Length: 221
Image (cartoon, rainbow, N blue to C red):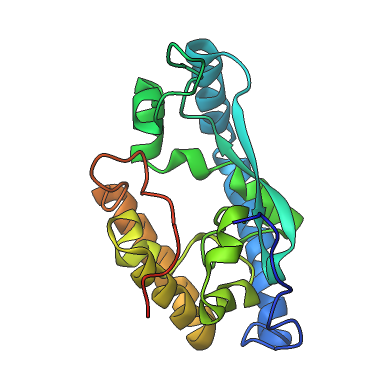
């Protein structure tokens, strides 16, 4: 891959989130994110302090990701890995750099909390397909790029149906289902199920991976 990407093939397409229902979703996202940030501010500060003491700066992990209609934005998370390198100066695998506090924060999905600021800015929704790496854009099948017809989310239909324990093809199929069947009721169902999944700590990672293996291209023929 050269890193260049073709134009978004659904630039003129509309989704179920266009119009009044989508506007209501955006208002609910903003209000809920602001309320949660206010309520959890002590926890937020405690996690930030714990990371600062155990790993140093920076406290936040920042990465550019494609969002709504593949517009690039900066995603925020709490940092969970250190910068340990091998003898050649290369970063060790993610699983080896995951710290003790990082494992705990990830197991409870608390590393996602800074993304509430992304929700306030409008780059994320509370519910939607997860924003993935920019390098994956050239690897999608055309149908899979429909996941960018809606705002990405902190949680989504794929996250409550296996999260990182399912294949990439299954993950994308769940994303497209969400785009094509979205409703406010479905969002509420996903939010409720997300709480249950977090408490059960299901699907956090694939075996031997900090999260899951990188997407190298669809195996769909």
